[in-house]
Length: 382
Image: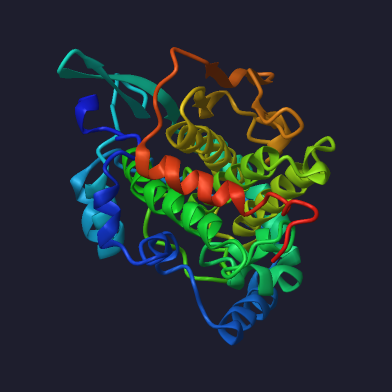
């Protein structure tokens, strides 16, 4: 299938499509089928401990999923299917499955309006033997499920509270910041689901009967991780607001930015601990989330944006997820490239111009959110 960019990522201009969604309602679709009660999760953990036994090896690798195929639709939840329909952001080329998100540009030429598109991020799906190798990491992380259970269940829905433990997020104190983050998440949902549908990457539970996740495995594809995408999108957007606040503690190197990224990384890794994701899924999700954060900020403020590429077949499957390979919090910059012995598996480019005007509604929301992080003037009455 090849879909033209005119149906692609619309750069947040069509916010009216989001008005039909309730607050975090559609974002919860990322976790559809992935939740559970604390009692059930604890029972699944102890049940696995009781029956898992010695490692079964070797196990025949499953066949690849069907990329971008309607045959997969009956296996998805209705909310996931709805998200897929919302965004047609995919181009399938040759023998390799690749999902491409396009960024929309609009400019005035006299009375007429001209629209063009540029690639924003391209994600190539992994090979099946890479995922089979990553089962070692999934199995290792299963040992700490009892320690991470409360976190994992609390992070089924968007992890605003976890970022609020680092930055002073509160629905009464920073309502516009919360609204901005929720808007970004609602926008990202169909993008995530459309890429998952296009790549059709199978979940860990399909590679071994010993994975035995502690929560239900979501119906949609494994890569990119939606939780990793959400977490890094939120973390970087929040960090950008802090940097623009001019509050001295936030501009003293990157302590808050680093902690926000550590939190995002832990949220992503918890999905591997739970048994529903490979570490590679988190790598792809972080790359997508960090890039989308630049895109949303550019739509809010105008100016620079970033493009990227994640080439999964070149990622070393024996390696775990490490956000430092993708991003520098101190400079708020995506790293130009990430490499392994297989080659360059990720590249990022910043595009500084020509300056594009911000979307008016987002511009208003950004400045409302930014003002919430500025200190009141000393001597002011109130």
